[in-house]
Amino acid sequence: GRTSLSDFVVSNLSQGKPTQLFRDIFFSPLHFRTLADLTLRLWCRGARGVLNLGSRDGMSKRDFALAVARHLALPTASARDADGATAQGRAPRPRDMRMDVRLVEAALGGPMPTLLEEIARL
Image 1: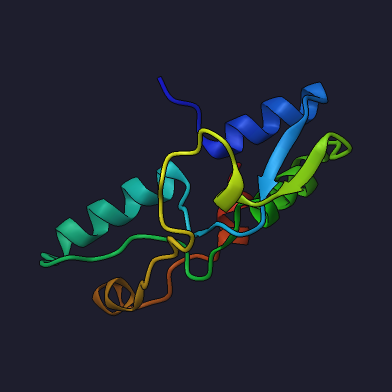
Image 2: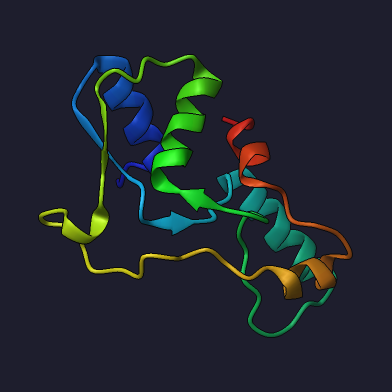
């Protein structure tokens, strides 16, 4: 029942709602279909151990939101830069949650998708 960040961005920007975009919080998400496909591929290959599944590069949540807006031709006038470190009511999390995907790339025999490639799947 939770809304994804991309759904939140699409909803808020398309409705012109004020939206804070965190420029100091970094992550490397995957589209849910990519995640499912990679999980199956790893299982079929008999991969073992702890493998980080994430996009190859990652970016700030601000840059992610703006890339989603560009991809879907959404207005961004209601978007405001913000710092997650000072945001009220934000759950405590690390500021850099990008994944090191070198082990999973080795297990799959190729590179993980970039975050821009994942945004293009929306």
